Image 1 (tube, rainbow, N blue to C red):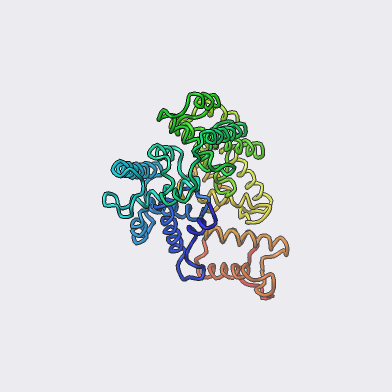
Image 2 (cartoon, helix red, strand yellow):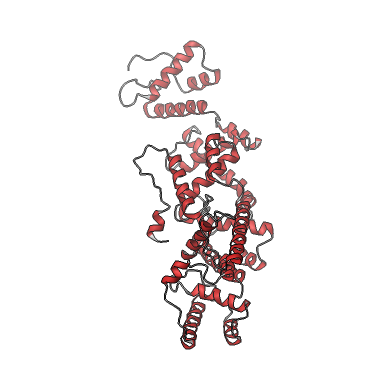
Length: 460
């Protein structure tokens, strides 16, 4: 995509504007529609990943019932599709087929493809054709659609004005033969480098080669490709249908992702690619698709065997459950050791205890959501783990008090100086709660066992 085309789909609103972030994303969505004719941004769109993530998030919020009605209505008015990606692809294909049918009817009635703006039968046809030409010029039009348009008219991608500006094709048969031979040699070179003849529609090394390959398919179907040329192309493994060519391209892409996953396995020793890692996000999405395709039965046996060779985890949740109990016991043993050393299970969120702190917080979240098993909950409670934030704060201060007593030999924390602050205020709050009768019996017993005095010493 050229710089001018990229600028056409970047936010038109300057950063200094008072628009909210949501409104700025809507403006970017409008710019996208201006260029592509719809607002269904691809899930992994490299030109503006923030916009594609934002669109996906709006759909997620709608499913959860968290998208405000004014925003839902505004997006619906723009034409956003709330359905699944597969349903959207089907709808887009149906819309494309309908417009292609209108273009075919126009060609049948007029003999050309110079569609006027506002054609009464299909007013949007001229803009649609211009969009297809734009996508073709930028290598973004699928091979199957390119082939159908070429079948309709070999010069569909050039308007009459562009055709009149272009130099006339040479009439000399010898020069045409020489041009064909140059293209065939370029195709052989492509085959030697890539192992197939699935040339992209706009290959940077030779932008015209992909279109030349499409023309050979069209000529063959029309019976205008000589037997000699057909045999030479066929011997090279030429794909005679757009679907075969597209499949070759997809096969090549699969091999690239498989190589990336193999490299990841060599580095990390497993196939659990983290989705939150931006650098590995697309690889994680590819791994997810392999699991889905196998569940649907659309992943070939050969690919399954090759992925099995990497010890691919087809069901991460089930596979994780195999070692989950062992990991839980390991962390519980760490927590027991921490309590034996420090007299408390209040683990600080700091090194070297940060991972244990995070695990303990995870157990609290699992209990709140009802996912912590009763035996695990009882064992943690017996160790002294508290579940509510308020109790947790009390336990943290009590642990600090034990550390203070260990360092100073008493629990009379001064209210001034560096040693005061939060712990001193907590000590004062315990004395006030005891005086008011609001301090629970277990807490009172624990404080007294630690040597706590209910009257301040007066030395502070």
